Amino acid sequence: MMKIRLCSLLLLTLTAGAIAQVNPKLQARLEQQARQLEPTVITWRRHLHQYPELSNREVKTAAYVAEHLRKLGLDVQTGIAHTGVVALLRTGKPGPVIALRADMDALPVTERNNLPFASKEKAIFNDQETGVMHACGHDSHVAILMAVAEILSKNKSDLKGTIKFVFQPAEEGPPAGEEGGADLMVREGVLDNPKVDVIFGLHIQGIRKLGQIAYKPAGMMAASDWFTIKVKGKQSHGAAPWLGIDPIVVSAQIISGIQTIVSRQTQLTKEAVVISVGMIHAGVRQNIIPETAEMSGTIRTFDPAMQQEIHEKLKRTATLIAESAGATAEITIDRKTPVTFNDPVLTEKVVASLVKAAGEENVARIPADTGAEDFAYYQQKVPGFFFFVGACPPDTDPAKAPSHHTPDFMMDERGMLTGLKAMLNVTVDYMYMK
Image 1 (tube, rainbow, N blue to C red):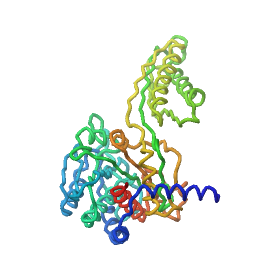
Image 2 (cartoon, rainbow, N blue to C red; image 1 turned 90 degrees about the vertical axis):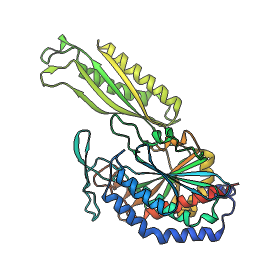
Image 3 (cartoon, rainbow, N blue to C red; image 1 turned 30 degrees about the vertical axis):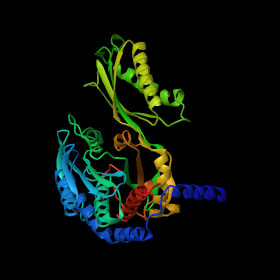
Image 4 (tube, helix red, strand yellow; image 1 turned 135 degrees about the horizontal axis):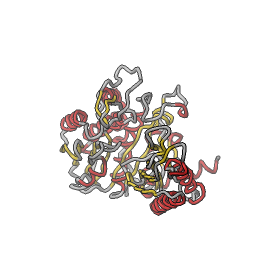
């Protein structure tokens, strides 16, 4: 244990060496202002939570954010990637262009919490009426970045370079038939004019200990691919299956077969891989063997070469299993989100900033997370660093806390102060890195 702690301290010492000394008075002032602004951050978050909007529909949210940024005297652009908002803080001094990102969209989830600011909003999603809820903490991300913008604006004379505040729509994915999210933000030039040197982002986690910050160099969150396999057999009476080719049985064999791609054909000691079938549809009546069956699922990978290998093996496995039964299989794979890749050099430099925000005992390097995050699109263009901030209520076991994307999702609002301090630290420290 002593050896591990000494190694940790040595790493932090080396990391801190990459950062020029930030004025101690500025550091203290940022800390004080963050604490003073905490009640306002909570107020902002509760307003956003009560009035959530779905992906590409964040009209009122964007207006709320833009009004705040304009009051700060920032150069504000709206309507980027449909409803995105971008603001610039120009210090007038030479220095890096640092982008900070928050996602704004909510989910088609009906809230079950008894909070006084619980969402009562309704919307149409996939042609069905649904409740709308910030069931993933994006409301807190927006509130935190609004606060970062306010505090840095107040301290403009002590800063250098340019800070670009990016409020992004549709992180959860645009509606069917639409484009959106980080991919569209990048294509519409959010990383240009001025050209961004580095980008930072965070994600609140209601399933992580309150006040803890977690990170991982390199592949932190998975690439997410969606696949569909259409199996075509031959229809027959359910009483005489030998007269047909049963696509349901073939589909079951394919589902079992593709799991061996993970368990027997992939070097899992290199990186993790997940293949999950989430939907299967076939038939209209109990005594009719249908002609076709269709299944859909997701692939999660952390290495581009392994990702391509998995795609090829999935196609081969499904095709040959179908052919062995006299059926055919048509496979399509849609690359949805790249790997959330934390630049290793940048990560090493900013760990000390996280420690200043939360304390060494509350900063943890974690294994890769098989969730996906479209922050990855920014990281494909510029060095980026993404981290988690814990917000599980202290009286709740994180292992038993309601998951994100569920009606019972809950977060402790005190976690936002940790996130606010962390974003302030990584931003200001990076300005003064040697």
